[in-house]
Image (cartoon, rainbow, N blue to C red; front, top):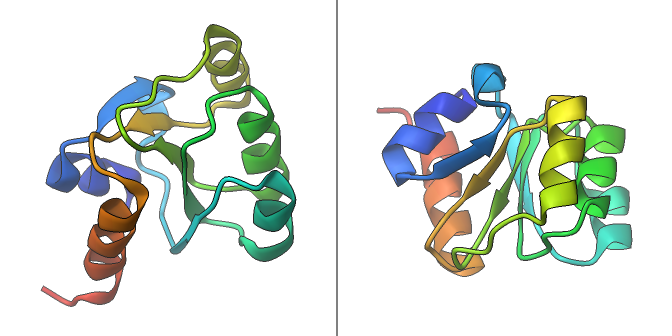
Length: 113
């Protein structure tokens, strides 16, 4: 499934790299501890976090994540957006909390409709 489909189905707000929403999402990871995300997430994951600082872009780039979704209507810091644009990493915002969003994305990725 691509990011664009997830954005549409879950009413996410795209904050940057909208031209890169055709990336395939192969899995997901939910977490706010950067060292944990670096150790446990995988290439192609969509990363769900509450963190808004530019280090999230560095981690997503390092791990080759499909994109980042910020929960609880959190907005990325301006320098985070700048870095994400440079790295061409989509950042989206959801009104949902991490638990709810993770469950919905898991369902989308694992259900054959």
